[in-house]
Structures are given as structure tokens and as C-alpha cells.
Length: 306
Image (spheres, helix red, strand yellow):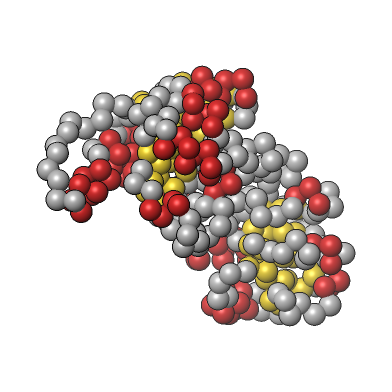
């Protein structure tokens, strides 16, 4: 039995060292030096190559190294393979503070004043009057963000795949109510899981449904946004601005138009960063649970993708 770490795009020396401390006696390997992959039963994955999964005939558990599982080809895994994600309570609080901060920044026109400062312009305006925040995705993160917005006197509405009832939130659900939801958003926050159904959901038809003063805040996944449609919506004043923390390609290429667009605020995927201590505890717990044939924590429904 072996545990394979396939977390690409970063230095994993500290991660590997901690795993070996917390799982003494476990054969821990790092991709691409995986040895005999038939011995691998547990994979810790983030941005793993598509070619990996067909080489694991005895795979039992895939543990995401983050809160999402969109980088794992769920439909290609055998039905008996369990897929788990990291759940970090502190991450939800960080996300809520990030969203509140950027909603307030747009409401108070801070991006505009920063640009005017560079041009030595003195053009004061009242704060924006919009006070309704629409949240797409009302899972663990979305509900904490909603509560934070309510605590700061914002009206919250929500949209989700299926019907939900949450205190103080006007709820919309399903494709047939998406554009009615968007039409009522002063600030539209995307916190959806990335699935085939939500990929590209922030597109031209949705932007056309929003009020012209509307602001997009995407803190979910870059692939939720049709980038060309977003640029068109901003350039034609269908919407007023966008804050983006996630992108299709990270880091964003130097020539990408997002860098220089006056109506786009970019941050480098920092809205909510998972604690290594929290992640390690859950990885170790699930590895031990698999070894003893006990229930795993934070498994996802592989048919839904979350």
C-alpha cells in the first residue's frame, strides 16, 4: 500500500516531510517518481496530469489538496473510488472578509479614486447606492459570506442549482431563474463549484441581464467566466466593473488584457488560503480511515462534482 503525492506547480518538500512525520510506516511517494503504481491506493492530488489516473489499478481514495475537486476527472474514476476535499473553517471567514472588502471598495469607488490619483484628478462622488449582493453558490463558503454581508447591512439574495431555504435570503434556483436573479444584483459574487454545468456560466447573456452599474466578483474558479464576454461587457458598459481572484491560467500571462483593463481589479488567488495544519490533519485522518476501513471525512458526490 502506498500514498502518492501528485501536487504540481509547487515545492512539496515541506508537505512530504510532514506526511512522513504524521504517517510513519506509510510508503509515501511523489509524482513523477511513483514506482510501481499498482501499489498506490491513496492519491493526494492538485493539478494532477490526466495521464495519471489510468495507471492506478488499485486506487481507493483521491484526496484533493484544496477545497475544490474540479481538477480531478470524477467521471473517469471507478465508482468505488472515494473523492474527498479539504474543509477549512478559517477559509470561509477569510473568503467572507475578502468579498466584503471588495464590495465596499466598489461601493466607495476606491478603484476609481486610485486611477484618479495616478492622473492627479480631484473628482469626488457620492458612494454608489447599490446595496444588494447576489451570491451564486450557497454551500459552506457561500453561507458564511452571506452572513458577513448581512451583518454589514447589505441585502443578500442567492442562486443555487436546487432550491434552498436560508434565513433572510431571497432565493433563486435553477437555470430558469438565473437571469431574474442576475437582474437584481448590484454585486454578483460567484462561489459555485466548477462542474460541466457551471463552466462559463458568467457569460454575455448573464451580463446583459445585470444592471449597468453591476459588479462581478469571481472567487470560485477562473473557468466560470467567459473571458471574452466579460471584456465585451465591460467595454460596452453592460456592467461597471469586475474583481477577479481566479483565472483560467495562473499565473496570468503577461500579455493578457485583464492586467491593464481599467475596470478590472485582479488579485493572485488569495481570497482564501487553506491552512497547512488543517489540511495535514484531514489528509492524515483520511489515510488512516482508509487503512482501517472506517468512514472518510468530507467526501464529495462524484455524480454532482461537489
